[in-house]
Length: 193
Ligand code: 5GP
Image (tube, rainbow, N blue to C red; front, side, top):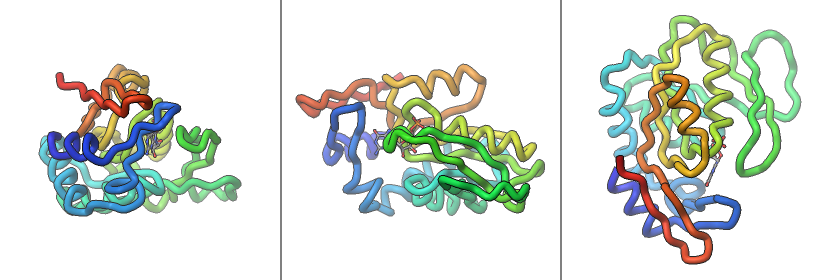
């Protein structure tokens, strides 16, 4: 998506440790008009899928997921991160290692909001090693629901999450794929297939 790539080039900051900071329009301050156009693009890309729910993970996926949901006209569920959970049987639970915080969270979704009748699009802001998406797929499968696809704003193509998810036969669409980025020069190169 050209608009997103241009915005990353203009405002993205490459940090050491393979981190791309996009706080000015995506992860802290949010450009809702851009999110809306990203939502429209996800709708176009997954138009052939019978999606009736969007699943994301708190916190930074929620804004994008909500704007996408307006285009699909479906509800959004966000998986909650917690350090200690009450295993009361009311929730599906999985573990996710956070790329940015380098720690493992329990991640939960209430059984009330995900079930066998659901056809789910996963939406998140970044894809790096794929741990967040793996966890969301795990929750969907625990619920007996169907993974219709994964929509990502920014995939870091030099990390291996994308390759792994695609090789599982899961439809993954990323609006921008970073092929390489250099913290010394700030250069960001996108992949165009
Ligand atoms: P993964 O689980 O695929 O390794 O990492 C994805 C999650 O880590 C995303 O939900 C996102 O919040 C965060 N993340 C990973 N890489 C980056 C990055 O380069 N920049 C930002 N802002 N967040 C990232």
